[in-house]
Image 1 (cartoon, one colour):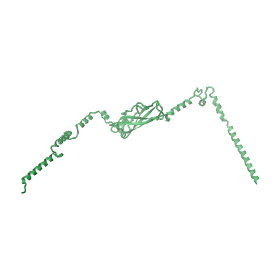
Image 2 (cartoon, helix red, strand yellow):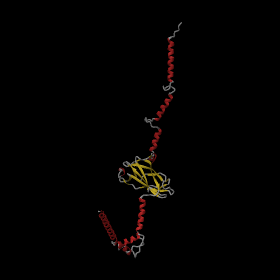
Image 3 (tube, rainbow, N blue to C red):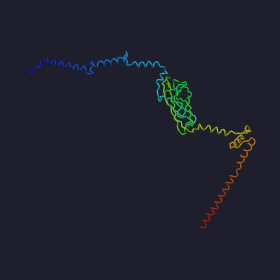
Image 4 (cartoon, rainbow, N blue to C red):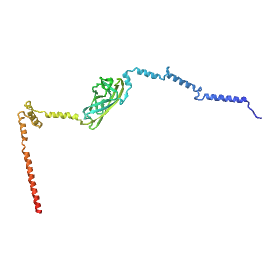
Length: 319
């Protein structure tokens, strides 16, 4: 006999299935079920803690940093915001004169700051050399700035001493006594300095930069180094060693006295006037030179005539 299920049983089964599906959906991750609700609540509390009363996203650490910055002095702010390299505002060129130094010899290192745009260096220049004094075989001294001139380019420094185009400073350098001739010694100058705006006269910032060059160990060939020695030697040679008797009244006699001194002869006051007279009389006789030329021409004429006669005689015999 077939068995029939009642409608009540079907309804009960459907209700039980719906309840099971609802429980499974509540426990599924990402649907806001009981298992995930505490995590969402904690995240919301973190967002509310980061946001201020005015709705801004500034954290407590950021506010503390701003307050600390406001409390700093201008010098402290510059020191904390140092920038490496100032090529956008100026560039540095270094050179040593003379370009070669013998062991133990000294020279001068010139560093030129070529300012660009509106950047200037006020006077006295806020620049500090931080490189070591000893670099290999080179020893550096203290820097000295060239004097600043009244401003003509920067409108904020018109008439006031300022470096508005170039700034040059010198550093004495000395080559070590044990340096090997023929080698090249590199030299660098590290600097920390402040640049200003020439229009507003306000500080642009603090920078660190480096200028580099090299020095060869050897004898300098610069004319400026050897020329003073030659001039001094020539001056010593032209000075007479004896007294110039009568030079105030007779200029020609003084010139004659210096001529023998250049030849290495001693000049005596008594015989100085008679000695140049003999030398002046000798070139006045013009006879030897014309006589020598006349004899030579006569010999050529006689020889040429004899040769012509011989040729004519040969021609007559052939006929």
